[in-house]
Each structure stands twice: as C-alpha cells, then as structure tokens.
Image 1 (tube, one colour):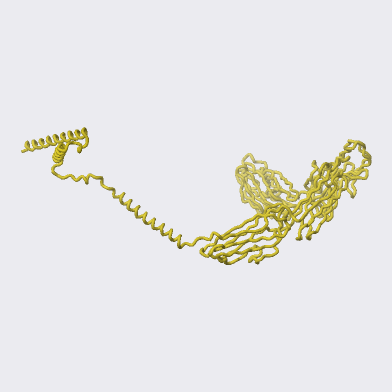
Image 2 (tube, rainbow, N blue to C red):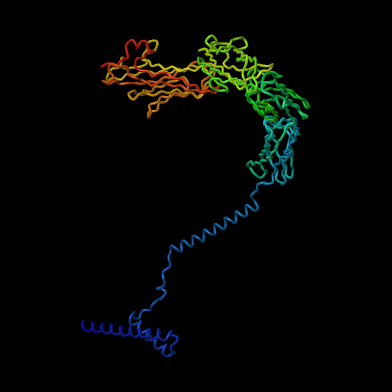
Length: 635
C-alpha cells in the first residue's frame, strides 16, 4: 500500500507542478498580450477554466473567501476616532452655549464712564484759577459707590468749592450713585501757586461700581499746567561801574503785581566773590548769609531792601549780583522770580590780598593749632603812594580764641580795632608782605566764637581798599584714646590667664576705645587698628553706639558710627584679644595692637578730622594694678 500512496502523491505533485506551469504560462501570455479581457471570448473562457482547475488542484475543492484576505481594521484607531468625534460634539455644544450666554444673558462692563479736567493749561503763579472736574455716565446702566479724589499742587491755595468735599484735607468727594444718561461737575476756585518755571500735573481719580457689576472700576484724568512766571517781580539797581574799595549802594525791589497777597517771601542774594557786605536794611547778622524774609506782601505792594559794601582790591571786571525770590510753603522753598545786577569793577591802584594758612579762601582749624596770616600789598600805579595805613581786622560776635600774648605780629601793633601797620611810602610797582601767626587756645571756652572773619585793608588818600574776607571756623574738639586693661578700676578682672604673660599659656586682655567730642556734630565716624600676627581676636565686642567688626584676612578691627551728636561728650567701644608667648618673648613686652586712627566729618565746617594714638603692648600703663604685677613675658 505504501508504494501506491507514494505513487499517488507523486502523481498529485506532478499534476500540481504541471498546472502551476500552465498558470504561469497563462500569466505570461496575459502579461504579453494584455488584460485577460483582451483575449478572444473562447480563449478567455478556456483560460479561466484552466485557472480554476489549477487552483482546485492546489487548494482542493474548498471555496476561497477573499474577504478574509483584507487587512483587519485596528480597534485602537477606531476607539480614538470615536472619542474625537464625541469630544468634538461636546466642545461645539459648550461654545454654542457660551455664545448664547454672552450674547443674551452676560452683563457687559460700562466702558463709557468718562472723567475730564478742564482748566487753563498756562497759569501765572499767584493768579486766581478755577479747576473743573467733569464726570459723565452716558449709558442706561446706573453707577454706584462713586468716589472722586482730586490731587492738586501742595502750594495751590483753595478758596471755595461748588460742592464741599467729604474729606477736605485730602480733597475726596463721596458722590454715591450716578444714574444712567447723567453727569456731574466739581468746581474748585483758588490761587495757583507753583514753581517757576515748571510743568505741574493735576490729577483726578474716580472709583465706581457699575450697576451690572459687583466689582469696582476706576478712571484717571491728568492735565499739565505750565507756569513760566509769577505775579511776584524783583529788580536790583546799583552802580554799573566802580573801583575796588569804593563804597557802593544797591537797592532791590520786590513787587506783588497780582490781586492776591503773599506770605513768607524769601529773598536770597548771591553776592559776587570779593564783595564785602558792610550794611543792609533790613539788617543781617554779622557774617551770616545775605537772606531776608518778608512776612507779608499785599496785592500791588512793593518791598525794598538796600545793601552796601565794597569790592576787594584784587577784584576787577564784571561782577554779578543774583537774587532769588521764593515762597516758604510746607517746609520747602517754591521759587517765584529772579533778578540780576552787575558792576564793572575797574582795576585799582593798590591791591591788598589776605592768605590764611596758605589759602585765600575760607579755612578751618583745630583747637590748639596756629593760624598763619599773610598780607600782600602792591602799588600798581605809575607813581608812589604815600601815607598808607594797614589794618588786619578780626570780626566775631564773641571773643576770639587766640592767645594774643603769643602772637607773632611782624612789627604790627595790637589795638581794639585789630593789628595795624603804617608806611610812609610805597613805590610804584613795589610789593610789601606781612607775615603773622596766632596760636589758638587749646580749649574753646564759654563765650568764645567757633567762627570769625578776617579782613585786611589799606587806607590812603581818603580812600580804603580791602582784601577779600576769609572765614575761619574752629573744628569740633574730637579726640580718641586707646587703652588696654586686665583689671577694672575697682579691681574686678576684665581679662584672664597668667599675669605677667607666661610662655605656653594664654592671657586675654581688654582693649578700650574712647571717643570724646564737643562743639559740633560728627558723622561718618570710623576708628580702626590692626592686630599683630601673634595676637588673637577673642571677640566679645561691646559699644555704646555703632558696631565693632573684625576682618580676619588682614586682622583689622573697625568701629563704625553713623553720627555722634555734640551733646554726647563721650562714647566707648571695647573688645578682647589674647596672646600665647613663646620662648622668643621671654624678657620683653609683647606688642598687642597697632596705633589706632579716628576719622570723622565735622558737620558744621564740613572738614574731615583725623586723630591717632600710639601702639600698645603688655606694659598696661593705663592699668595700675596690672602694672604692679608687670607685663614682661616670663617662662
């Protein structure tokens, strides 16, 4: 049976191969001749039958379902497409609902509420002014909780309102509700006062709540007013030409050309360099600035100020006097007008120059130092000048802190008028130099002036020429002391460890800085010193005011104080340091701190003061109890 089966299988295989070859031939013939439908009808039918037989031989008599050969559809893709469609429907529904709500149901904000300021954009300071704040609600929706805040220049003088503000100090009106299709107005009358020249903002701020909203809204209106001039006017009249040393008189007028009175009018006169102010009406304090205050100027009134003086002998060419007229309002100055005059100073035949400690300008000195004055005279005429009297005048309200008995006068004579010299003749082109010195007292007592003026003058042929004055200021009496202690005055210990210092053992000491000051306030105060390499910063810093810090990189200790009032005579700062002696220190005092330095600015004289102290060691000369024990290092 087996051979038969094999033969049969061989036969089937042979037939399948044959049919396959036939199909391939047919495919080749179709490929060669074109589509199957292009063959003759009979041929096509024969060929289709042959193909069916071939397929049946290959696959048997089972029917082939070609639909099963199609690619199976992806289930995930179908699910995603379905989800997208559902979400699209939901989104479209939501947007449709939102559109309907906003179109027919949602209230809209009233954007038509307006706020406006109506006033002149250019106003003369001192003139009357009217400010109108207009607010409008042109819609049918009412406005509630309407509040208006008006911000005017602080110098504006308010006279009246068409409606009194709820808050007069801050100019706030609580207007309540405003019906639809309505408006309102706030009117403020007053006097416009502003800096000249200036551009000043006026601002109105409104908050309100529309009837169809539960939240507040706001509107802001701003306008700018230009002020170029004031109703206050000023002029200065005086000689347009003069010689140095000639007595000169000037007249200044301040006129109120407006309809409103002014109060607290300030006049500040800037004098040219080298002009010596001798007298004025109203009078001024000796040595003080050229400033006057007029309490009240009525409308249309004129106030006059006169002043007189001379130019220094070394001044020539055009010299200008500049006046500034201001109003004192709320602790500030509001400029209103300026005035200027000039005098052409002709060259003089005698020049007198004064120099204090090497400078012809103002100077400041420490108590205990020496004031050195030099007077230089030169005859610039072509002929000799005869009978010249020289005077060095010291001017102050109080006694001047000079040791007159120790003064060097270069053959001058002391009198109640000052130091004087006389010369019979000074030749043409001749120069004379007088050198003087005046030691200052080591202390400034009660009744002593801390500022005085010095002027040198030369009188001859019935005229007097003067030097430019020099202001001398006494610096504040600031001092620094440094001490190192182991014990308090009462014997209690400030330090610890062996005393005298012992090799291999640590001893701790207390460094004390003391600043004393009087006369003027100080600011930007700094005390500093350095620790030697063998000294250790032990900390525990304390100070009355300010702060003590240590910089480990350069071993510098610093005490910084922002300011120190003249009313505080003394302040202390202290810190601890320690040493551990080695064999090389035996038999000697050990240095503990470098010299200390103090720097501070005198608020009155604006000079930077410098003070210093020496370095200190373990001798502890300021500690009597420790000194008895000794400070030399031992084994």
